[in-house]
Image (tube, rainbow over all chains, first blue to last red):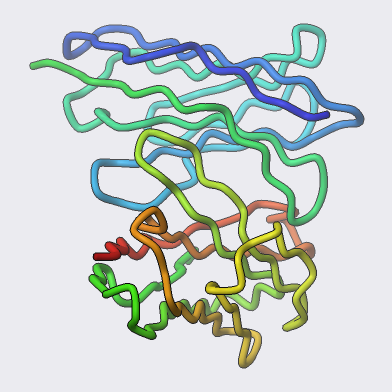
Length: 111
Length: 115
């Protein structure tokens, strides 16, 4: 079945550091890929998405590229801020109304 | 504008109470969802409504009863819950049409504590 594997956390970085959170997936067909972010005490917010191979999603300085050859969708940011501290979920959608989540990666940014 | 509004934000209820969680969206989406999220875990799908009809029920206990009065509203009726039902309940919506494709948008959630 479809699945998503994220790097295990927690991840702790200093402000202005470079961030990578790894995400790989297993799916039949051509799923859409997503990153959601959950700030403390809040719901999930869509951070970025990509719907086909080689698409790059970007938002708020975050980027991720849909790599079909490596079945990956790694999240990157060049310079993180304290306000980026949150839990990040990688997810795939194999079709309408379905969403498969990774386990989530907790990110803490220290000033 | 991608907004899903949930009320109440926090709810404490006893095991014999009856309460409801409410969700509203005005994006014209025709699919609406309830998810349950426990601490440090990803959300788990409970129910999906598509065009106001229940299309997916992930074997959820009958003490949770969903209702979709119209295309903008989704309720989750709660009765005789157990302490282990305490969690964050997330409403979400999506549209199969247009450029959003199959993107699912979530609300802020309702924090439920069963005592």
